[in-house]
Amino acid sequence: MACKALQSKKCLELDYHGFRRVVEVHTVGRSSENTLILRAWQVRGGSLGGEPAGWKLMHLDEITNAHLTAERSMAPRPDYNPKDPAMAGGIICKV
Image 1 (spheres, helix red, strand yellow):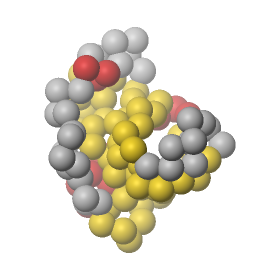
Image 2 (cartoon, helix red, strand yellow):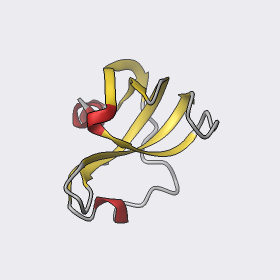
Image 3 (spheres, helix red, strand yellow):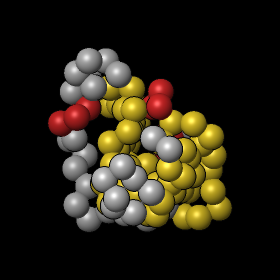
């Protein structure tokens, strides 16, 4: 679903750590531990840290109820790093 959001240039709405969020997917890949992860700009929603917007790194296996929205993604954001060091295990798809 995350790579589909990238391809369609749409935002992804999802539940993560107890909060409903809307994100712009920038990169999907694997961590150095081979865990599937997602780097996204959170447009709005809740978070454990209390920041409603900003860069987020999410574990794909902890995301639930994800679906594409009709809202257009503004990715890539100006400070996007296409060589995200969190993706040490490899990149699957990116902006």
